[in-house]
Length: 530
Image (tube, rainbow, N blue to C red; front, side, top):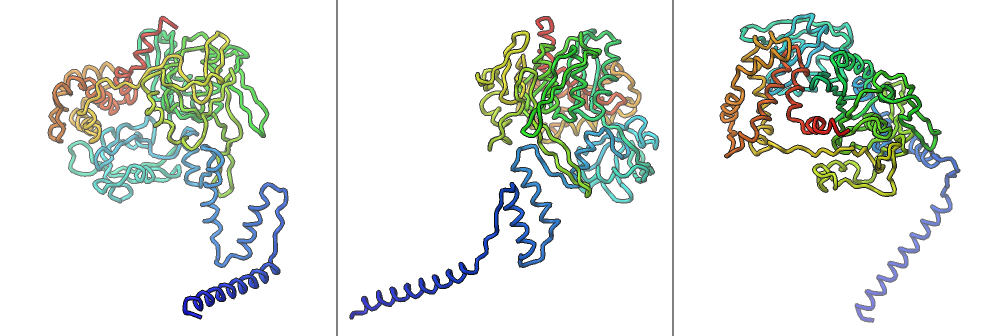
């Protein structure tokens, strides 16, 4: 027998012996194998696995850590809006909607590396202690917070705290050499959801709502009734970038504009019977001509309100298609201060449209996709599905499939956007220069009491010229024709940002910014058509 044949025989023998040994081992294991019964209970297999881990796992298990890591993944598999919230996140989520939190009562920003007080909330702890707009926060409880690259969120956490506790600040004011010490007792601070309310003209009012918080309805009525007294006959209700909040606030606000028995919204789920919400007919604004502004970031309660107004032929919706969040979350709280937001139903507009957009693998990229296929600049690019076509009582055709499509589409406005403006924004030059202007004219700004006072002040300043020099010092120079194209945007933004350093706050900011708003321009254009 040659060596080749002998080698093949040896290999075959070795393989045979290996298979024999393996089969004996498998047989031995099979004879001793135990199978755990999986019954018809929906969670049976999961409970069996967890039980085996607890009884037999090789190492000691940190159960708390495992649960905290597992729960977010479980909730994520359900839908995009069912979430698990650990204690810190749950507190922050509730705080933003409840309408108050404990703190010192200031608004500030960090344009460079030092926090500058923009405004002091009237009646709040900081106002009582003597803090002023323009003060620079240098130390908090003895810890240096200026010039150390501390982010804004970290500073917010240092300033917030339980009601009744004290915080010690040291601030730099104006040209004083020494730091000024302040001892401030934290207290409940109201969180506004109505950003601003004022008259755009003799008969046209404007109200912007940033979220549907626990206090939104009361805030709205307190803001809108004075406008009615000033002669308001038509209202622009701005819900752009309003991501929603409490359902009951959307219902109460919708009720103000609708007649008795008109459907506002209904909800329904696999484990929830259909529930209708209808207007009482007791609203004070049922005869007010209404324009509702929405965009791709208007979601949830904003869409409920816009859908109710649109489907009842009650007002005109302007802007761009809303986000498409029509899932109802119900809060569940646990004793360890954590909780979940569990989706229990879907919202439907009065005509039967489902507000929720499909949540497939592209859900998180939806807004980007809208840009890509041109929806942000052309109404013709909005995808409409004929099988999801509905008709309002007045005969207007509306579409389901996710979000509210406005009655009047208004594209993103790129007028005045130049490479120079983009470069300025990348370096935050406009915001930074507004702080320089505010410092330079601090005494004059503190005397401003009305918008007319502010107008007179800014008219004395060569804001554009001073900004151009500042931009050049920071390496940004406009190309041919760019300053002429972008000048109005820059100057109006600077005027508005300066105005925030007065007692007027957003009531100074928005009147300037809205002069650049093409959606507001469209409202003024179509007022006599609708």
